[in-house]
Amino acid sequence: MSAVLARDIVKKFAEVTAVNGMTLAIPDGEFMVLLGPSGCGKTTFLRIICGLESQTSGDLIIDGNLVNDVPPRARGVAMMFQSYGLYPHYTVRNNIAFPLRTQHVPRAEIKRKVDWAARLLGIEQFLDRRPRQLSGGERQRVALARALVREPTALLLDEPLSNLDAKLRASARQEIKQFQQRVGVTTIYVTHDQVEAMGMGDRIAVIDHGKIRQVGTPAEIYDEPADRFVATFVGSPPMNLLARNGFYLGFRPENFLPREMIDDGAFAEFSFRVDRSEYLGSERIVYGVIEGSDPNQLITAKLPAAHVPEASIRPGQFHPFAVRNRALRYFNQDGKRANRR
Image (cartoon, rainbow, N blue to C red; front, side, top):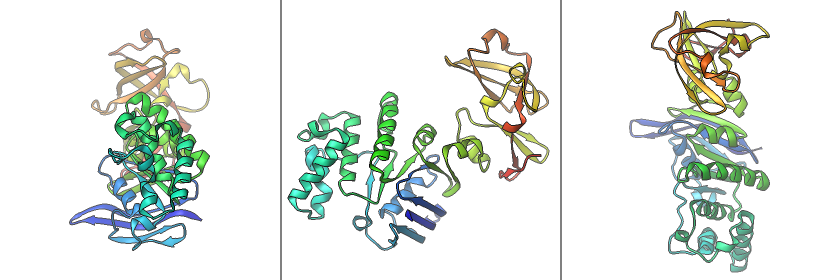
């Protein structure tokens, strides 16, 4: 049974349709990531699941129960906001206990649950401190503990790492994922960061303009994009797309290699003029254009730096590059995936 099932959810704000017919089934225990650019509707969709927004139409089922008209507190979900929403004048202990007190949970039970969540997240030593005395990562753990003491059917996380610096964000990703696997709580995680999505999600729902473009595992989303939006939104650098007569030819930068590096299987060969390159330690990112294509259409190659010395990639000159046929993807003029031609 799905822990959360959304069926044809629509949300309109006056003349603006923020969520446009989203349908998504999230099994019990899954880590589902909602990925998309800012303003695509992913946070609105999350707030509808939580009950902070009401849908214009469509049905929402949580743990087998229709919750369209059920208030947030009674839905059995817990939401962790981007700002963490901690009360600055409360201690950590009281912040974690707050949702239980509003539900009039007995004092002994509150203490048991707070102590359990604090141990689980390794913040027992902070229980008598206030949020201003904690680091960003520690405040994040407190917010997670506060969400978990409710023992929710689903944990909803809205861009929880956006306030952390890059180094701390990387370690926090690992902590959240390991924690979710250990506890087994169904988790719905909103982000615009594809690295977070690819590294954390069991599955990813890619959203654009209020619609779900594709749902799949990270490998499915990356290797078999359903349309040109998914192909170019997921991946850094994004998938290359070459306009051809009546269709688009797509290939990932890491699959576009100097011809001499491809010695097996069928391949498509291109004459590639190098404009510039970036050395990134283990990789070299090369930018240029393909002979015979639109000169304004920049193509990107991601090359293993150890096997491609800078001297072998001469700017301003054409070089033989190729892509294995099995790495090529085809898209119709309307942007949808097409069969191999």
